Image (cartoon, rainbow, N blue to C red; front, side, top):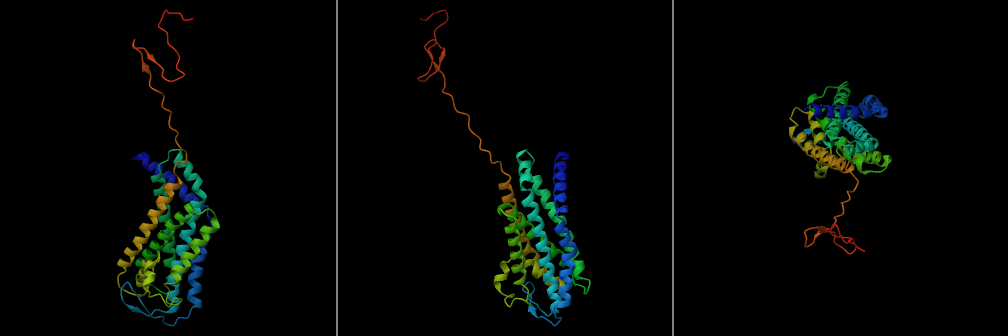
Length: 289
């Protein structure tokens, strides 16, 4: 047990060091989240924006700037978590593969990455909830934090997938950016008239958006929406594990040892090599020639 804990602690330390070295991501966490939320509150009109919340069936009419703050917080945490895990997977892939080929257990590496991702998502979710609560208080702040956490975890797992399968860094960054923007924008009643469409139920953050809207503007429980988000999270995490396992597999092909022909026994019981090139074996004490 102590050996497993030591392996897990070592892998977790390397994963956290890799995140800490990503200074641009740290800057996004500290600056981008509060700036984006503050700009949404200042620039978007505060007139009511009625919409139907599919998770509870309620018709809500929150101020438009408050609504945009929630969707902005979701967009921010998904982008940051996705970027951080993509960068960590993309740049550390060769190191992980060397560790795995040297005999380091892959399950410990995966658990370490999952633990580091969880800590990062907890930090940015709490930070985004606090930033959104400066101007007004969400009705259920704990549920809002849980919704942001689920969305961040889902995109963090997608970042692992993109970091493992894409060959260039710009491809992964563009993929995460476009998926997150389209995902959240299509569910914002202010920017999309089809936010009540049945199609949005298949988007990666549908459950998180429904739970966060319920947490911010309603007293109804958003547990079912969080369960829906859990399905996306489970699928993304499974895909991330499979591609990580495939990327760290041993690419060396084992060559089989050629089978030698079995010796052939003579009438006297002495084995004689078979085949056309077999040498003649003379009994002891007899000279040939």
